[in-house]
Image (tube, rainbow, N blue to C red):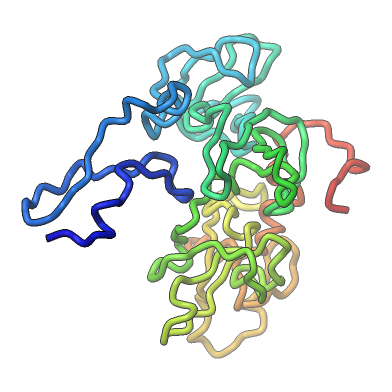
Length: 311
């Protein structure tokens, strides 16, 4: 027996929060109805853009963001004593990456960044975002000044500016190491302080705990700026990697006022807010002191502060 409503369910649907068509290919219990069709009638451009979740790349590629061919390098790339940075996301390259063999170019991409398509699906938009390589732009979500890949949506008045690669990669429902016990979901209308930095949510809201409306009434929420902070970072004042930390390691101590100090700024920090820490050396510092003012501008770039979009 089947409900009248269920008989008329469509065989193929598009769901805004998922990039691919939703089909049931797995369930085979004969006591239940399942829907299974082949997407033969789909337009060729849609089929090619959603045929797989990742692009398979070879050892040598031609990427839309660079004029020369890029060659895969499986070793950690060091340039003049410093780690080379990715032109796509501006973060250091620590694993396999594609680099331009031309010595004058100094162009590299993380392997993951090289897989970014020109048309990038996003859960918030019906049509894909257009990905471009930009020397400089201000992200509308996290408010960081950035260089590298930016995503644009021209025909939507509500999202009329660029979105950085980090913000565009966050799904509608996600998790974060600082709140691993519950999932987080995007809520543009959410108002209140960010659990990471203590600042009020911006115009585009943020991510809050899925149990905020339940009996637990969990108040955990993060803005885009904290959602995209690197989980590990390096600083020239310290020789070990620093881990982004949300729990106070001194909460059970007697309350020494010098325990909650930023070792870089040499001033007190709020123990309730996030900080970077080396557990081996008890080295703590404010996130902005570790990352600097322009963490997502590629190192070595010439940057004119007169064009700072957030001043």
